[in-house]
Each structure stands twice: as structure tokens, then as C-alpha cells.
Length: 399
Ligand SMILES: *Cc1c(COP(=O)(O)O)cnc(C)c1O
Image 1 (cartoon, helix red, strand yellow):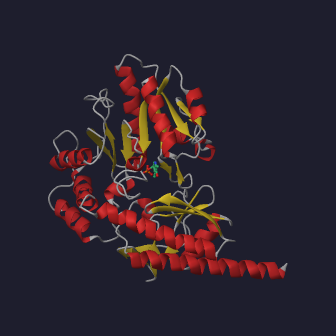
Image 2 (cartoon, protein in one colour):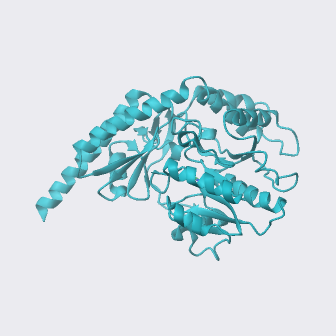
Image 3 (tube, helix red, strand yellow):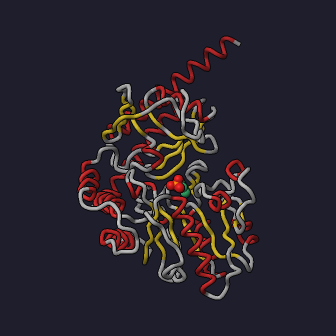
């Protein structure tokens, strides 16, 4: 099929028309169980009545006014996020990359406001993903994403994930902050050890650095906590979120302590759309559900259920599955075969999963998925594994 879209994506030959809960229905009327949730975005499933109600109610009133005026629902959403986290102030964006841009600018401006504009370097980690702007590809450090886009943006110093000695060696008079995903998403569901995060916190406190967590994928309930940092006992100074907070509406943002945000005064940053009334209505509606008593405990419980089922799957298919990773409903299945083949086989069984680095297929179902649908998904993975084993046996026999 010819397409007028610039082909930056190798898209599957599959288009969807509607969704219900954890299920998508293709334009051909086929039902797919979605363990990808639009890359951890559709946190409350498709056609969620509470989100539809909030969005349509707001759509009938007012879509956009700009940040030149007060936006009462934005004040409310910021306060609710602050009340539910370490943060003391919030800023809203339209995407994860913009949230990370804001986080990095905030960290740099903090030091400038302290009289140290030379402290603008940010330490980041191998395997990281922070988005696709010119600065954030430098922060992520993946050469495939950097190549051909001119000189790498200055001020991002990358070290191996989990290597505290390398971090210490990278700290210098120009260092402003350390930026890390508590669990790397695109990097293959790689969890930072809590002791490593504690060591980063101590290093930041010792050298006056800001600790910045990228919780764009891990945040807003994904791990069974509101933010993943709660699992580790280490709070950052600045935290970027996006994906799950909008439930499918483009919304991101940053939380920060008042101290860390002190440089971000009137005129230092801006966004035309960020935090607009439609986004704020949906963000508040997402929090109505995610912060309701017991919801996060249910996510954690379902995460354990999924992990148990996956452990059985791994035992049944030792030639396909190498191991399991993750927390809550952010699970990774590491495969012994190319992960693209695994994801394609799952899609053949009408289950959507998402490939990541290190041969890991990500399972990121909606947070309100039923236990029945979780079990159904694992049963479809089982079918996919059987199909892969049969294909391999045939190949082997043919050789
Ligand atoms: C998806 C993601 C981003 C980028 O978000 P966009 O909305 O695509 O700009 C940044 N960091 C992490 C950890 C992500 O998963």
C-alpha cells in the first residue's frame, strides 16, 4: 500500500476501528487482546466510560485558552499530583519528550540560579530512552537515534546502567543532575537496583546534584505504586511523567520540589498547548480512578498473578522463553529467539505485545484489566509459543 505518511515507522499491517476495555477491534472486525495498551498509554483501557464522560463534558464547554489565563482544572490536577507524591509543584506538557526537556531545563536552570551556569551536564545511562527531540536523543544516547541528525547535543554524559563507580567518575564541576528511569522501558524492562538508586541519591546530596527520574513509562500506577520510586525508598528532586496520565489523551508533565523548580520563573519556559482544558479534564478523570482507594493494590495483585502465570509459561517453553522481568503490570518476557518473531507469533494469536531491547517483549496491559483477560493473554502467549516450537521443529526436520 502506498502511503502519504513519512515512513519513520515499520507499521504492522493492522488497523483498529474501536476498543472496549482491554480489547481492540480491527477494521476487519477481528478482536485483539491488548497487552501493549498503546505503549503503556491506555492505562484504563479503551472506551472507559468515566474518561469519555470527562472528555465530552469538557469538549462541550471549552477546548483551549492558552497558558496566558488561569486553568482551574490544571490547578486541581497539579495539586492532586503533588498530594500523591514527593513533588511540591507541577508543570504540564503534551508528551514524554517535552516533559524530559522541561526536567533537564529545570535542572540546568536551578544551578544557573545558584550562580553556576557552567553546571549543565546531566549524567544518563546506557539503554536509556527519553524521547526523540534533538536533546533527548543525546540524553538517551542510542547511536541509531542520534546518527544523521547533526552534532549530538552537548551536556549529556552516559555511563553503564547500575555502575556506581562509573557515575562517581563522571561527576565533575559541570555536573548538574543525574537522569534515570527507575525501570528502563525501551531498554528491555531493566530495573535499577534499589541500592543503586540509594547510592545515586547519596551522591546527588553529596555533590549538590539534582536527581531526575523519568517515570514516563513507569508512572501513574504501572508498577502497582503511583510512581515506581515508591518501590525503591528513594525520592527524586524532579520527575517526568506522561503516557498513563492521559489514558490515551496526549498529556505529560513534571513534578518537582519547590527548591529544584526555583529557577523556573515567569518567562523561562512555555508551551502553547501544555495543560489545556481537554487534557486537564482527562488527567483528573484518570486520577479519579487510579487514586481511588484500593486501585493500586489491585494493580500490584494482578501483577503478581500475571508473573505467576508467566513463570508457568516459561517452564512450559524453556526453548522460547529465557526469563521474566518487571514489576506490577510492567512485565518483560525475555526470549531466546529474536523478539520480533515472538511478538509476531503473539499477534498471530491476536495478542498485542511490544518489543524492547535485549530481546524482551513488553507486557503493559491496561491497569484495570480483569484477571480473566490476563489469563487469556497468557494462554494466547502459550499458543504463540507452541506455534513457534512447531515451526522450529519443522525447520529442524527439513535440515
Ligand atoms: C515513551 C517514553 C518517552 C518519550 O515519550 P513521548 O511521549 O514519545 O515523547 C520518554 N521516556 C520514557 C521512559 C518513555 O517510555
